[in-house]
Image 1 (cartoon, rainbow, N blue to C red):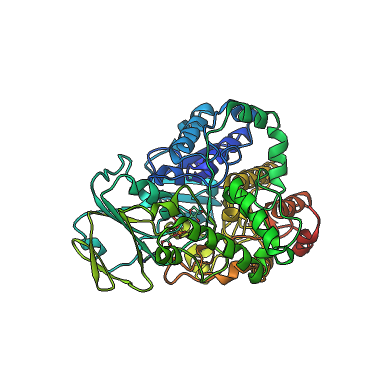
Image 2 (cartoon, rainbow, N blue to C red):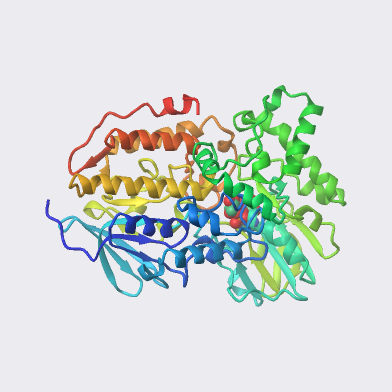
Amino acid sequence: MRMGKSDFDVIVVGAGFAGLYMLHKLRQLGLSACVLEKAGDVGGTWYWNRYPGARCDIESVEYSYSFSPELEQEWQWTERYASQPEILRYLQHVADRFDLRRDIRFSTTVAGARWDESGQLWHVATDGGEELTARFCVFSTGCLSSPNKPQIEGLDSFGGETYLTGLWPHEGVDFNGKRVAVIGTGSSGIQSIPVIARQVDRVTVFQRTPSFVVPAQNRALEASELAEIRQGYRQLREEARHTVGGVARGAAPSPRPALETPPDELRRELDERWEFGGLGGFLNSHPDSFIDARAAERIADYLRDRVRGIVKDPATAELLCPTTYPVNSKRLCVDTGYFDTFNRDNVELVDLNANPIRQVTPNGVLAGDHVYDVDIIVLATGFDAMTGSLGKIDIRGRDNLALADKWSAGPRTYLGLMSGGFPNMFIITGPGSPSVLSNMVTSIEQHVEWIGQLLSDMAERGQALIEPRPEAEDVWTTHVTAVAEPTIFMQADSWYLGANVPGKPRVFMPYVGGVGTYRAICDALAADGYPGFVIDGQGKTALPDFFSFLRAPE
Ligand code: NA7
């Protein structure tokens, strides 16, 4: 096979959790690598999402790298759930500790990537007009990195300040004495509204769909607790790798399905989970609530009662209670004082179902028949999730095939890692992998390590070219949909399904089979010589029955 000479073995796009570890791994393999990063520093989503109250909804001791026991032992998390500034400091520390910055080009946006068949190379073009080449290209561009700016008439004519939570200014925003509109009540709205409300003259929350919310029960991490975790860290990490969600510290699932638990007992159990807090308290609680809407409804009833118990004005409380989709069919939100915020005199809730936003005027927001005069509009309106960042890059594979065209009816991948027609191109936590349904760091590490193993196996065998077979991609894409189909995930207009972005195909993108199952599948394929992939024109075609992994006890 004729190989052109390239600038690097591998070009990595993005320097968040995924890109940083990928670079470290490539260096360990003795490969030359260059990371291209649009931002001025490392951090990925944690670089951009600096809105007030931004915080991770996975416990800090688990939302962190496990690849370096030394790093694990030396980094001092201060809170159960780390705030955005602390996570960013952590990633900056990682970049320094492993001397990663010298191979990262910051403030460099990748405009396009083109497969050169004759040279067997990727040509990666930056918006500065530079072109770099590499044998392999890894997109670590993030799942929630392309903010969704809503198409609201007049938004650009607004005379005050407008901010997207996902693109928050580094210098911060002075809310002092201001009248503020917050549009959007997903996780970002729910985290930021309580903090904003404490600083402003008045905040008006524009809600289209209320979210199911559980309390973070965030707190400082005691030194003794951290020391204990560190002692058992290796085991904790190993456990996490084989769970459904990639976390090991959550409350254990209930012994009985929600539907078979007497109401009083269910309430007592959920009270305990409420006290435990966070996703760890609730996500695993009753597995039947993920497949049976009646079971989900019992948990939903509990969460709605909690809202009614906190919010003093009954009409406002009812508006804050979700009723149009099952609990867990969208990502559960984790809060600190969200519902309490609606008991403040300076906070008002506007129900957009009764009073749709008609337009933004130079002075504020016209919803229904009322103009809400404001100085600042905060758009907490989410992301073009999972495919948005890739979609912004003109990626061309064999025969000039555009990834955007190939995916026009929804993403098609083998394992969420590669897409046919795009040789030697990897996506970290791509659509078709557990990604956003899991602890992202666990899933990122698994992908980086799997890709690292593959590259090392290929190098050992003198192999140069890999891509998935179309049949394998079809089988996997069908499997991803088939596993999601019977779950309640299909019963909401969520960003998992692309439903939040006008015109986006409605396809369930993440793999619901769970982190442990998915890892077992990836490991089995690697051990069997990578069936489903064509490596230098060869490879096994017979695929395992992916459903059998789901049935296997963990
Ligand atoms: P989400 O969860 O997608 O929430 C976005 C919110 O913005 C949601 O309430 C939307 O209402 C609302 N939205 C979006 N567009 C509009 C318009 N045009 N008008 C009114 N309201 C609108 O994004 P987040 O950033 O909060 O969280 C994303 C993930 O980040 C989260 O799941 C965690 O994993 C971390 P809708 O529901 O569409 O009616």
